[in-house]
Each structure stands twice: as structure tokens, then as C-alpha cells.
Length: 408
Image (cartoon, rainbow, N blue to C red):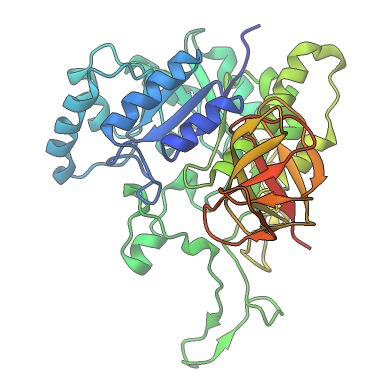
């Protein structure tokens, strides 16, 4: 049985390395152009090279997203962009535009091509078409059910791989092809600039009553008629694997390193537990609890089991749930003194309870009994962004471990 790939987002070089360290089998990232995430940090050519080298040194893969829908003005710049990319050992290019595919095949004939979910692939005949066009893997439209995915897997050639999103934000439009952002504030979602107007609060205005705003629901907070819950499939690892999906994709190139580390770590544990003993696999609620410790909306299984209903929308608020704060990143650890050098990410103080977690480990809890500054002097708190402090750890840690605290 070929093991399902855990594919993680890498909005910048730091996130790429964190994703790999916390258990991703592969990462996907964008360069400074053509990647549908203009708001992410993205990677320079030198950073792409370094990121690929890092991934390959760990036996992992690296995929470059070039999945915009190109306009005429994009063609020449894209050809120039490919000249910079063609000598890099990129494992695959994620694409959606047939013109971009043509240019890629001309510039890099042996490039492996993965079809983006932006291409809205929802049936086996369309999959057959793309296979004949040289596509090695299809990132399935989020609108497909398990039943449809199984049917597709059964009729496709063995060397056609299927990838599907398992965690993250859901777009209210058809696999991301949205014009709301373009229409309302002239930021084109299909060119990486989505402003997420689907998350805004709306009221209804009647034509003959200008200036009178009516809540569409009986609620003085307005109504969020376009606001989907977040996709979460960690409770359904067996179904994902048995459907024929070979890559489980996490959304979130614009998320923090804390988000990436937490989500990747939880899915890594769930997937590994399944393969250790598929016949006696039991879901551990702690994996789901971990996902709830990062900024998130309420969860849904999307289209996997059937078409979503109103229960999969959140009509009251578009706000994230943020019960925990990411307060520190371990930079070094002295096993003799038990002191960890920590880079502050949010304020933390002596006396607070914290949770510490790292790659392939369970978290542990402790109280901050003492905190030192860089000079070794005792301090009561770390209020300054990225302030370097030392904290005594109750258990051994390593560079890359993270510290969080519950918001009371």
C-alpha cells in the first residue's frame, strides 16, 4: 500500500522548514509571481533553491505553484520567470491555465505537472483529458464527494495521482473562482489578491428604501451569508486513504508557523497511527483538540459525504476562534541547565501556565517559574516583539519547539 502524502503550505522559507520538521512529506509554495497568494511572504529564487535543498536533504518533496489564470500581459514575464526556474530541481509545478501548461512543457519538457484545484476538475472524462495533456496529478475540486472520488480512482490509469484538500478555509465560490473581491475592491482573486469579502458582514437594502439596512436574519449583528466553516477531515483518515487519494493537502500559505506546525503535527500522528495498524485504528480525540488550539473557524467536512447544508455555514460571525496564543519559539536548549533560549512571539510572564510542543512529540504543560533576559538577569515578563529570553524547562526541548498559552 502506497502511503498517503501529507502536503503542507509554505508561505515563506521559515514556514517551509517548519512544515518539513513537523512531519510534512512535501511542501507547496509560491515564488514572487504567478502563485495565487500575493499576500503570502512567498519565496525569492534563492529562497526557493534553499527550500528545495532543505526538503530534499530530509527526503521530502517541493512543489512550486504557478496557478494563476494568465492574461496577455503575463505571458512574457512568465517566460522570463521560467528561465529562472528551469535549472532548479523542483519536484512538480502546480498549474491551472492551459497556456501556462503549454509554456511550461516548452521550457521544461520533463517537468512534472499537477493540476490545481482552480481548474475545477470534477469528473473522470475531464481527468482523462488532463492526463492526455501530460498532467501527473490532479488536485481535486473541493466540490467532489468520496463516492465520486472512488469512481474516478477506479477508472483512471495507475500513474494518475489524486490530491485533495483536507484542512483549511473553504471558498464560497466554485473551487476558488471568485469575482467578489475583484468587483468590490478591484483585487483579483484569480491573480492572487483575494480580500475575502465573503467573510464580511452584510445587510439587505430594499430599492425603495435607500439608507435603510435590514438584517437578512433576525440578528442585530448582521448576517454572514457567504461564510463557510473551515474544512477538517482529521477524523476521517481511513476514508481519505480508502478513496484513492494519494496526497492530503493542508490549506494555509498565509498562516503562521504556529498554525503550520500544529496542523501538520496532528495530521502526521493520525496518518502514522492508521498505517501502524489499519484494522484496529482508533481516532484519538487529542488530535482534533490540537487543531482547535490554533486560530480557526468552526469545522465542516465540506462536500466529502454529501453536499453541504446551512449547518456548514456560519451566519453569525466570520471571526476566528483563538483560545490559545503562540508566545515563543525555542531557538536553543542547554541540557545541563535546562534553560531554553526563546524568541518571544506574544507577551508571556512569570507565573503563567504554558504548553510546549515539538515535532513528533506530545505537548507538556508547565508554569514559568523564572524568566531571564539575554544578560541572565531575572525579569517578570517578555512584552517586546521577538524579545530573547531564557526559560527553565521541565522537560528537554530542541530548537524549533513552540510555546503556547491558554487565553483566560
